[in-house]
Image: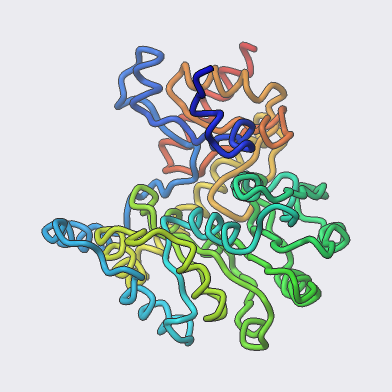
Length: 367
């Protein structure tokens, strides 16, 4: 009998889930016969202001050298990060968004016979990364849409190698108490690497500080991304901050030239664009007020969150998601997170938020 590709592949790939992002506006327009200009995407927590202007300019300049390989290891970006964090460049790892940071940590520290702990309604990539390495994912039930730190600590066993914890949490948006987060990380045993996922940390007024633990020699690593506040989701660039020994292992686990020269140039420039960061936060805060006021007027239950998105209870999440797409508004259903009655919506510009509220009320009133 002729062997199939599945016969030759690693056995666990047969059941490996695939990450499903929000659909691009062009695909939704084509599927429903809509004008692409009239479709708005509020599904993937992208920055509605677009890319950082300084990053955009730097990216265009870098394209002229597109025939050259990027600097392998992102030294210049790591040096700029080192200056901002007051650490050495050897404390930093650059990846294709924070997603590659998550995947590389799993590749370096997990595998068959090990466990990876995370919240049951936390970012799905933690589970996917663990499964891909043949590790056992350990989802811990959450409390009030936030992390139950006591339950997570109890879930740690001698087989645990990684604990992932985002704050604000995606997709629920709940922010954890920063002092409690740091204390939780400090309580973990020496055989566990703790990863704080700070994808939305720039939106927080009082973010947790893990640098003191890092300097104490604790096994902590911080994952960050340029996809959200800096508006560079399409360029795929993020980074990790950790002990140089951990960072060196991550470099061994990554592919060569893993971040493009265009993405690196944009990221370096984005770090200097403080004005754009402030405008992004201000726009997000205003949009949250607008959306929550509209949802309260409609009598809908929601989790306001601390990031750039809201979680809204609509009753039938998938049906509402499909109905909104037919009307040119793309959001995110949360049935895959065990939240079938909820959707997640990115906070957009004023006109986008108003359009979403109008279409949501129409869909729900005609359900």
